[in-house]
Image (cartoon, rainbow, N blue to C red; front, side, top):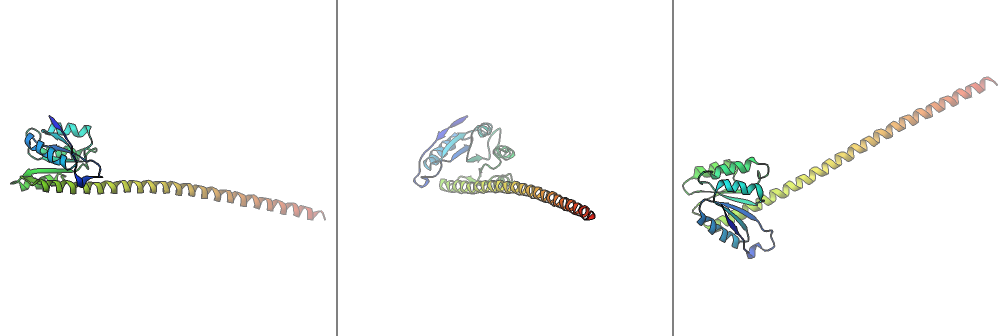
Length: 202
Protein backbone atom coordinates (compact mmCIF):
# COMPACT_ATOMS: atom_id res chain seq x y z
CA UNK A 1 0.00 0.00 0.00
CA UNK A 2 1.01 3.59 -0.42
CA UNK A 3 2.45 4.60 2.92
CA UNK A 4 2.33 8.36 2.65
CA UNK A 5 3.80 11.60 1.47
CA UNK A 6 6.27 13.64 3.44
CA UNK A 7 7.59 17.12 2.72
CA UNK A 8 10.01 19.56 4.24
CA UNK A 9 12.31 22.50 3.69
CA UNK A 10 15.99 22.84 3.33
CA UNK A 11 17.94 26.08 3.27
CA UNK A 12 20.13 24.89 0.40
CA UNK A 13 17.02 24.07 -1.64
CA UNK A 14 15.40 27.48 -1.44
CA UNK A 15 14.34 28.82 -4.78
CA UNK A 16 14.35 25.48 -6.58
CA UNK A 17 11.22 23.73 -7.77
CA UNK A 18 10.03 21.00 -5.43
CA UNK A 19 10.99 17.57 -6.73
CA UNK A 20 8.85 14.48 -6.15
CA UNK A 21 10.51 11.15 -5.41
CA UNK A 22 8.85 7.73 -5.45
CA UNK A 23 10.59 5.53 -2.87
CA UNK A 24 9.92 1.80 -3.25
CA UNK A 25 10.98 -0.70 -0.58
CA UNK A 26 9.26 -3.62 1.12
CA UNK A 27 10.53 -2.37 4.49
CA UNK A 28 8.16 0.17 6.02
CA UNK A 29 10.84 1.18 8.49
CA UNK A 30 13.26 2.05 5.71
CA UNK A 31 10.55 3.98 3.87
CA UNK A 32 9.55 6.03 6.89
CA UNK A 33 13.16 6.97 7.59
CA UNK A 34 13.68 7.96 3.94
CA UNK A 35 10.49 10.01 3.92
CA UNK A 36 11.54 11.97 6.98
CA UNK A 37 15.10 12.64 5.93
CA UNK A 38 14.37 13.41 2.29
CA UNK A 39 11.50 15.61 3.41
CA UNK A 40 13.94 17.65 5.46
CA UNK A 41 15.91 18.24 2.24
CA UNK A 42 12.87 19.76 0.56
CA UNK A 43 11.68 16.77 -1.48
CA UNK A 44 8.15 15.49 -1.67
CA UNK A 45 8.30 11.74 -1.14
CA UNK A 46 5.67 9.17 -2.11
CA UNK A 47 6.18 5.81 -0.45
CA UNK A 48 5.31 2.37 -1.77
CA UNK A 49 6.07 -1.01 -0.22
CA UNK A 50 5.42 -3.15 -3.32
CA UNK A 51 6.46 -3.27 -6.92
CA UNK A 52 2.89 -3.67 -8.14
CA UNK A 53 1.72 -0.54 -6.36
CA UNK A 54 4.77 1.37 -7.57
CA UNK A 55 3.82 0.60 -11.17
CA UNK A 56 0.26 1.77 -10.50
CA UNK A 57 1.55 5.00 -8.99
CA UNK A 58 3.84 5.61 -11.96
CA UNK A 59 0.91 5.53 -14.37
CA UNK A 60 -1.06 8.13 -12.45
CA UNK A 61 1.48 10.64 -11.16
CA UNK A 62 4.45 12.56 -12.43
CA UNK A 63 7.64 11.81 -10.52
CA UNK A 64 11.07 13.35 -10.88
CA UNK A 65 12.96 10.31 -9.63
CA UNK A 66 12.41 6.74 -8.42
CA UNK A 67 14.42 5.27 -5.55
CA UNK A 68 13.92 1.55 -6.10
CA UNK A 69 14.92 -1.37 -3.90
CA UNK A 70 16.21 -4.19 -6.06
CA UNK A 71 15.07 -7.10 -3.90
CA UNK A 72 11.35 -7.24 -3.12
CA UNK A 73 8.85 -10.11 -2.89
CA UNK A 74 6.43 -10.86 -5.73
CA UNK A 75 7.49 -8.11 -8.17
CA UNK A 76 11.19 -7.33 -7.96
CA UNK A 77 12.85 -3.99 -8.40
CA UNK A 78 14.41 -5.22 -11.65
CA UNK A 79 10.95 -6.01 -13.03
CA UNK A 80 9.76 -2.53 -12.09
CA UNK A 81 12.85 -1.04 -13.75
CA UNK A 82 12.17 -2.97 -16.97
CA UNK A 83 8.57 -1.72 -16.95
CA UNK A 84 9.73 1.86 -16.42
CA UNK A 85 12.18 1.69 -19.31
CA UNK A 86 9.62 -0.08 -21.50
CA UNK A 87 7.02 2.68 -21.32
CA UNK A 88 7.24 5.83 -23.45
CA UNK A 89 5.80 7.82 -20.53
CA UNK A 90 8.61 6.84 -18.14
CA UNK A 91 11.46 5.76 -20.40
CA UNK A 92 13.58 8.75 -19.34
CA UNK A 93 12.50 8.84 -15.68
CA UNK A 94 15.61 8.84 -13.44
CA UNK A 95 15.95 5.66 -11.37
CA UNK A 96 18.40 4.95 -8.56
CA UNK A 97 18.52 1.27 -7.59
CA UNK A 98 19.19 0.21 -4.01
CA UNK A 99 21.21 -3.00 -3.99
CA UNK A 100 22.71 -5.31 -1.39
CA UNK A 101 26.21 -4.60 -0.13
CA UNK A 102 27.41 -8.02 -1.27
CA UNK A 103 25.75 -7.93 -4.69
CA UNK A 104 28.05 -6.12 -7.15
CA UNK A 105 26.66 -8.26 -9.98
CA UNK A 106 23.21 -6.93 -9.15
CA UNK A 107 24.45 -3.37 -9.46
CA UNK A 108 25.97 -4.12 -12.87
CA UNK A 109 22.72 -5.80 -13.94
CA UNK A 110 20.68 -2.78 -12.81
CA UNK A 111 22.90 -0.33 -14.69
CA UNK A 112 22.77 -2.50 -17.81
CA UNK A 113 18.96 -2.50 -17.58
CA UNK A 114 18.83 1.28 -17.58
CA UNK A 115 19.24 2.44 -13.98
CA UNK A 116 20.82 5.89 -13.76
CA UNK A 117 22.74 5.08 -10.60
CA UNK A 118 22.79 2.67 -7.66
CA UNK A 119 23.61 2.68 -4.00
CA UNK A 120 24.36 -0.33 -1.83
CA UNK A 121 22.89 -1.00 1.62
CA UNK A 122 23.80 -0.01 4.20
CA UNK A 123 24.57 3.49 3.02
CA UNK A 124 25.24 6.88 4.55
CA UNK A 125 22.24 9.12 3.95
CA UNK A 126 24.52 11.96 2.86
CA UNK A 127 25.82 9.76 0.03
CA UNK A 128 22.27 8.95 -1.07
CA UNK A 129 21.32 12.63 -0.98
CA UNK A 130 24.34 13.53 -3.11
CA UNK A 131 23.51 10.82 -5.65
CA UNK A 132 19.90 11.99 -5.84
CA UNK A 133 20.97 15.59 -6.36
CA UNK A 134 23.46 14.62 -9.05
CA UNK A 135 20.97 12.38 -10.86
CA UNK A 136 18.28 15.08 -10.83
CA UNK A 137 20.74 17.72 -12.04
CA UNK A 138 21.79 15.48 -14.93
CA UNK A 139 18.15 14.77 -15.79
CA UNK A 140 17.45 18.52 -15.82
CA UNK A 141 20.31 19.11 -18.23
CA UNK A 142 19.09 16.33 -20.52
CA UNK A 143 15.55 17.72 -20.42
CA UNK A 144 16.82 21.21 -21.25
CA UNK A 145 18.80 19.76 -24.17
CA UNK A 146 15.69 17.96 -25.42
CA UNK A 147 13.67 21.17 -25.28
CA UNK A 148 16.44 22.98 -27.14
CA UNK A 149 16.51 20.27 -29.80
CA UNK A 150 12.73 20.42 -30.19
CA UNK A 151 12.89 24.19 -30.58
CA UNK A 152 15.69 23.80 -33.13
CA UNK A 153 13.68 21.18 -35.04
CA UNK A 154 10.70 23.54 -35.08
CA UNK A 155 12.84 26.38 -36.43
CA UNK A 156 14.31 24.11 -39.10
CA UNK A 157 10.82 22.98 -40.11
CA UNK A 158 9.65 26.60 -40.29
CA UNK A 159 12.66 27.58 -42.42
CA UNK A 160 12.03 24.58 -44.70
CA UNK A 161 8.46 25.77 -45.21
CA UNK A 162 9.66 29.31 -45.89
CA UNK A 163 12.23 27.98 -48.37
CA UNK A 164 9.56 25.92 -50.12
CA UNK A 165 7.29 28.95 -50.37
CA UNK A 166 10.18 31.08 -51.71
CA UNK A 167 10.93 28.44 -54.33
CA UNK A 168 7.28 28.38 -55.37
CA UNK A 169 7.24 32.17 -55.63
CA UNK A 170 10.44 32.08 -57.68
CA UNK A 171 8.99 29.44 -60.00
CA UNK A 172 5.83 31.52 -60.40
CA UNK A 173 7.90 34.65 -61.11
CA UNK A 174 9.96 32.79 -63.71
CA UNK A 175 6.79 31.45 -65.36
CA UNK A 176 5.33 34.95 -65.41
CA UNK A 177 8.54 36.31 -66.91
CA UNK A 178 8.53 33.61 -69.58
CA UNK A 179 4.93 34.43 -70.48
CA UNK A 180 5.74 38.16 -70.54
CA UNK A 181 8.75 37.61 -72.81
CA UNK A 182 6.60 35.46 -75.10
CA UNK A 183 3.90 38.15 -75.19
CA UNK A 184 6.44 40.86 -75.99
CA UNK A 185 7.96 38.69 -78.70
CA UNK A 186 4.51 38.01 -80.16
CA UNK A 187 3.72 41.71 -80.09
CA UNK A 188 7.06 42.49 -81.71
CA UNK A 189 6.40 39.90 -84.41
CA UNK A 190 2.95 41.37 -85.02
CA UNK A 191 4.40 44.88 -85.33
CA UNK A 192 7.02 43.56 -87.77
CA UNK A 193 4.34 41.82 -89.79
CA UNK A 194 2.18 44.89 -89.93
CA UNK A 195 5.21 47.05 -90.83
CA UNK A 196 6.09 44.67 -93.62
CA UNK A 197 2.52 44.82 -94.95
CA UNK A 198 2.49 48.59 -94.91
CA UNK A 199 5.80 48.75 -96.79
CA UNK A 200 4.40 46.56 -99.59
CA UNK A 201 1.78 49.21 -100.46
CA UNK A 202 4.27 52.00 -100.85
